[in-house]
Image: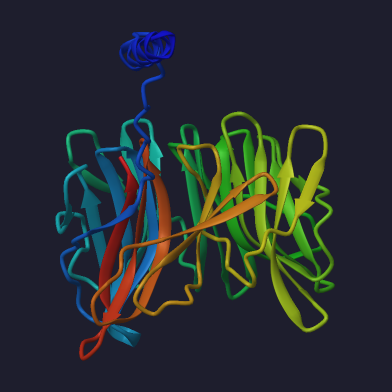
Length: 357
């Protein structure tokens, strides 16, 4: 009898524990964001993407060109947060040429335009009206363009050598660089008094320059030996990240250099010989890059957070034999990519993918 009473007490206590409001409740597991495919209106083959930039979740612009050799035509697409559409309203849309870097200056969109060999800056107002600012001279090579409120820069070359053209909003001037600089490969700016450029010296080395509003000077960046700079990412916080590649012992590997305001720190994430030109700071605070995929039917992206590198893949694409994201941008709480995809039996055309948002 005592044993039966003890058994009943144990059962009552067990039932109370099950229905007790203090019992732990299983928590829902948050789903890991995945890359999804976004349809893009087709362009004429062959197609090349030059740049992708986003102002927020509902405005992004992708530039490039379609066609080949002497028949290049400029190409412009807009993302409105829901879908990609092609923009054919800008000046020179049907003429030979190409579109390059996209910059947001105040409420305007600025895009570099090679218009039949002549350089100009396309400007789109908040009302959607286009205008153009011609360069003061024709260059044989238009290498790069950047713009921020208060200034814009174009680097390139003519038959006399390297040129750095500066636009202050009303007029153009030509700026000089240190004597040992042979040519510049790129330029970018955080503000009109914090501008960065990179290129080669006359002795064959690589150099990084910085403009503080008064002139160009050697930034004294301790680049790795035999290192090439692909891009520089200056951020509002003052942090600067340089992405590049180093060739040593017959092998090329990517490197990242970060300036924290006091010193440079160099790391070698496991990215192989990835070109780091389209490195962006994601909404999660990590650096994101597209990398060469080992699957012909699926893109691949790297996430670099300090010394930790992880990889994610885009959606599987039926019958794809080459998926190439060519540009990345942060769009609010999402990441956008755009590039090309080739499927079996057809020529490559545009593709786009999104993570989050």
